[in-house]
Length: 87
Image (tube, rainbow, N blue to C red):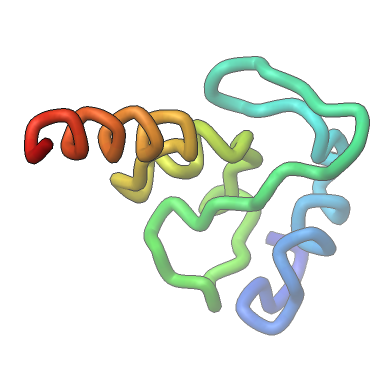
């Protein structure tokens, strides 16, 4: 890819270099933000591999799902349910 050494270029720079400049729209669900750029997910889970083909702009919810984490709302609901069960 044009002689770029993607491992030595940060993720945002790598995306900008290939014209992917919209960091405010999730590439999975289409959700968007006006306040804060979304996290950049490394598809192969290797944070050093900043090849544009390995990068995906995800909203916090989609990024949590990819990594098997719960959203804050889900964690609160689960905690409430557990408290209800044990009391």
